[in-house]
Image (spheres, rainbow, N blue to C red):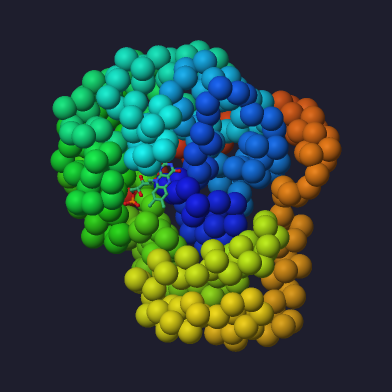
Length: 378
Ligand SMILES: Cc1cc2nc3c(=O)[nH]c(=O)nc-3n(C[C@H](O)[C@H](O)[C@H](O)COP(=O)(O)O)c2cc1C
């Protein structure tokens, strides 16, 4: 799943990972300037670090953004020491503030700096830790696309995700899958195609156009959290999964997870945000959204449970089920310190087996090849 700042945080990863067949998550970006962050900052972005960097068995990569090779590398090392299973470098963020401070897509104007950042980071990380790169096709235009891609390859990237737009294009017009095809060199390293996969048809078209076998989905998964499951069922030539109560259960779990993660107010605002995406795909969410968006506090919560058809016993049940799974992310700094010491100790003992499974999940050329062949999609 694509990293999305302000959207794909722990509660969303928690809920969606239980109902989807997502293979890998990437955290929201952590912006690196001059310092190496203390552990609690890493845990904020990735509470999963406290649970061997897995969420419902799905590995979570840690994304860093910045223009300083040394500080990026040092923060990557710190993340890995806390248990990160992979590091992802963001060279795609189009936000003005971020670009003004030498981070994100602005680096796409300087292939040599991309090379330096990737090389330095790669050289400081254990070989078992994948270092991925996420980039756009360019800053204002695409003329440096090949140079930027080559710089990341030469720096030692394990795989590269390409969002098929320039920074100036932000999120419109349509993603340019043809340009991704020109960069895709399957014998060199895995390339993940990203941008505008909202349906099985889009997926097939993207695969045919780009030639890639790896895909990153963002907004399409927010509109339909079951999209990856549907795509995988399609590839396996199985009937599409029946959604049944899954969406209401998923939303209930998301809400409860948000309350545990921060507060009820946070849960309400995040629920409205996600419903706004879901209503594109699910008509019943549109109706619920129309009612809920004007409600606040207890009135929202009460109506939400009624609309989801949850009784107070169901809510209690969800709560009890989720509570033990919640990493204790918002405790005191003293608590963080004890945890980080313990986590480092346990994780150095388990890291090798963890990385093996993360890598095998990410190799991208496993069973899916046979499935794509069966569907004549290769
Ligand atoms: C709200 C929002 C936040 C995003 N935050 C990040 C981010 O933190 N890191 C990143 O690499 N990309 C970020 N992106 C870009 C997405 O990862 C993805 O590249 C883009 O949405 C295109 O894919 P899609 O069409 O499947 O959504 C963000 C996109 C959106 C819409």
